[in-house]
Image 1 (spheres, rainbow, N blue to C red):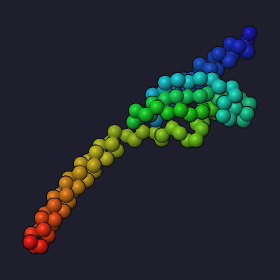
Image 2 (image 1 turned 135 degrees about the horizontal axis):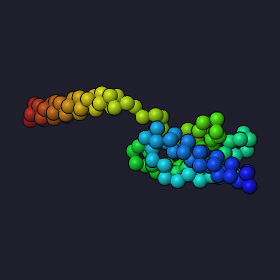
Image 3 (image 1 turned 60 degrees about the vertical axis):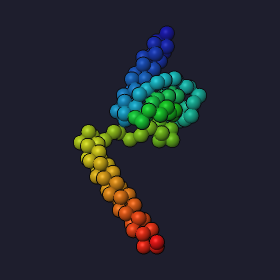
Length: 124
């Protein structure tokens, strides 16, 4: 009986650990299922394996195998989970660079259009 209670408690703690890991990386956990015979289950004795479905920061559904234990952290198969999100300040810098690039692209399109018109006029 004590073993069953211990396993239930460990499963609850594992799910919280995996959820926190996903959320820290901008993902939304959709499903976390204990999988005693999943990928990597025959490794460390105290690690438990879970099959995880989640939605990434871009809204795509993804799947991964996770191994976790009380002291071991969370390990993900195929490194499928994106790195930790950048800070809002870094995102603002990227947005500014993107706006500058869009303006430059527009300027280059207009220049190309003008050059094409001039070339067509010279050949007439």
